[in-house]
Length: 145
Image (tube, one colour):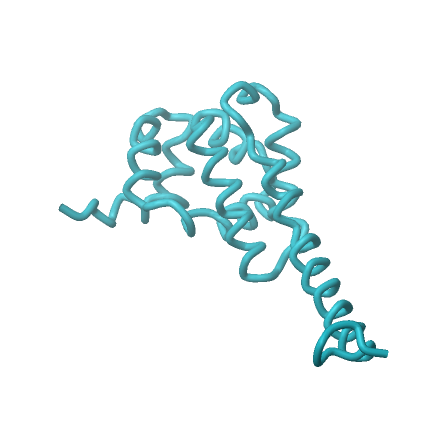
């Protein structure tokens, strides 16, 4: 049976199923779930929101390149929205969780932008050790021009 000029039913079904597979792949890449975990400026006081974000980074649920980028974007955006609360939550988190978050941090945003935010807390005793031991690399890359 011909559906359109030059396309028979078998070719149509193959093309249709291929399109369905592509759409399902993009829909299930985790981007929506990861982006929904971003801590917004009006949610800075929510420890639960930071816990959810950090759990996603440490879950090993997302391992693809795009997913790692989404996780980095979620962590970095949450940090930029709520820098003090992000650092405080990092300190309270387990070493395993902290390592996972840091594996997904500093990939998307410019390092000098992250350093600018970190600099506000660099001399504060409660954050100094974390910044100097785990985040000091951001200060080594200078903004161009």
